[in-house]
Length: 263
Image (cartoon, rainbow, N blue to C red; front, side, top):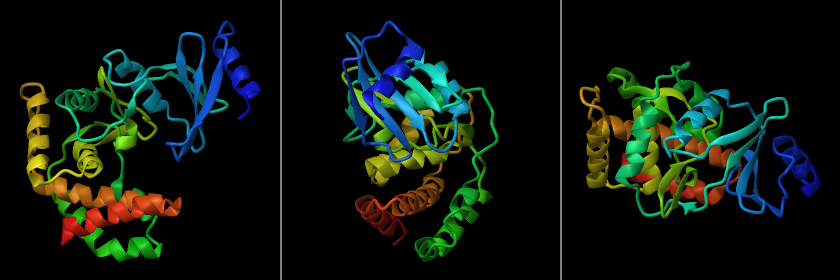
């Protein structure tokens, strides 16, 4: 996208802004993202390729006021464009913080209810690939276990990889709500386990921290076994997704995690 085109988009947002620079960000693989700087502010211009995330944008508008995520400041549904405040920082490294889990709990307790994410449907997209078929037996066993367990429903991010967690001196923030919708909260928890490569002791600590952040009386089925099976399906989804896009280094890292998990 040329600077002239970006300038035209920002003129529709705020014609008083003077754009000093624009930079394409290469961290996202699903959309085209640009960091745009003006005199005193920085903005993220997001160009959606696949779908218009109405639910996610509405959730971000709500949770930006609680310092959970950046705020959407302007949208153009017809052209699938959105401008957000840009949160300066780095992709999260090391581990999560208790404050991040508290933010995640607040997101999960969002009162909006949507059609729930269908994990089997998402996996079936890759069913005919040789890669998926090599994991099929493991996936089916994990799905059988998951469906036998009580659900812990919530409003989930559904793409909680480290690349979607920004850390700076003020804390950790969630970004990229494109896939946000109702789901079992263990899907998000499994994503954190995979992203931060948590061991068994750290997984127990994660579930304890999550449970402590819940409002009093809120039901939560504490289960390390359920978390393990959600790790399996999350890992296979990610492996197939990255493989389809030719990101071999990610496939190799995640495949090693999966092999260790199910050995």
